[in-house]
Image 1: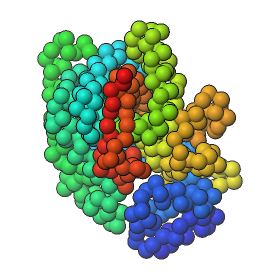
Image 2: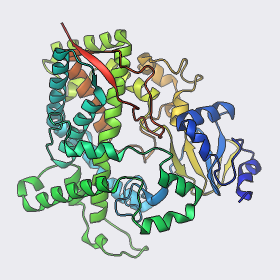
Image 3: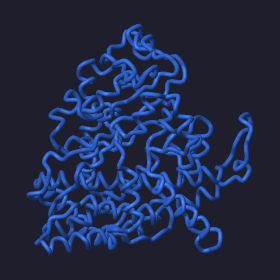
Image 4: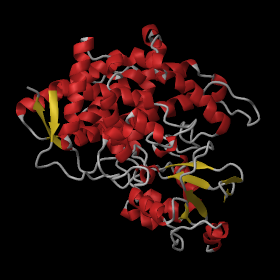
Length: 472
């Protein structure tokens, strides 16, 4: 029980003192990002932590092409079995599934999605204009969530929800429940204290996520797939689901020997990854959209510059389309600076597949190399006055002067976020179109500084309360 705690000491790697049974787990009560920041500063950027009894976790600014660590219950899995989603697949299986998904987010495919994104953005703006007329205080996160749910449903699955006009839409209501999980969820506590119980909990169908939510989205994916199978026009769509269906290999739906080279994707892989994208496409982008608007509300001079940029592009091109929003460098700088302060993933990790030495540091095979993105993004040596919102950090000259791994909002390397381009297009479309009509302002209910939930993401605590004013 005690012996594993000496591992990092033998390797000459400093770190916080672990507690018997709990390792360093209890330190995360203060917040995952805060703990990472403290360790990063105290131990000179490379340090070792014990996630739980017997599990080593090395936090550093190192990067690796190794697979990600499978989280407890191999999640998110949707049938309580071995994970088949892109975030937990390894080696050849990961490459096979990633190659079926990546084409859905190519520049050409994004261009084809433009009309759906623009329509959703227009509905988003209609709602904002109405709020401006009413002069009311409102939770922008709710509106942003409805917008991103409409976008991911339309672009990836061909499902038109219009939840912007029905804020209680079942899709949005269920997606909200899915992300109401923190680092001290009862199942997570059990797994950290008693790792051998993983297999027992899997057999019992336990999950960190609400079963009714998983069942709802599972049924939704089944319905869309049934519709594709019975309707020729639906089957002609060029979206994420259709590309995966085209890559379907029925042979993989059976038990396949481990030494057989696999091609295509199984039906379970299609279903699980469809659910993953439906849910992940909702929360992360909604938070970033809300947080960017929040930063602009707090920094009116930056908002004025974006408005001037939007007006100039509209005057030049006559409309705001895919090409136009990509000609707005200052808007992009504001989004990038928001993602620096509030990265979508505050930490991500890779498993070291073989013994390796990096700059004199020996890392044994099997060690989890955790990259604390939040701590790196708030390092004053890289980002002077890191808590301040300064979009100018992302000018061409500033970016070229920094190490490329100093900014990691979507991860890096082969396993970075596959939906990054779609997310950025959604964000820029919504913000540019909104600032044509309104400006974001703070109100008495605006929480400053904004609270972030104790997870490893940027989920907003208690809502994003703002007002909008009609532009004159």
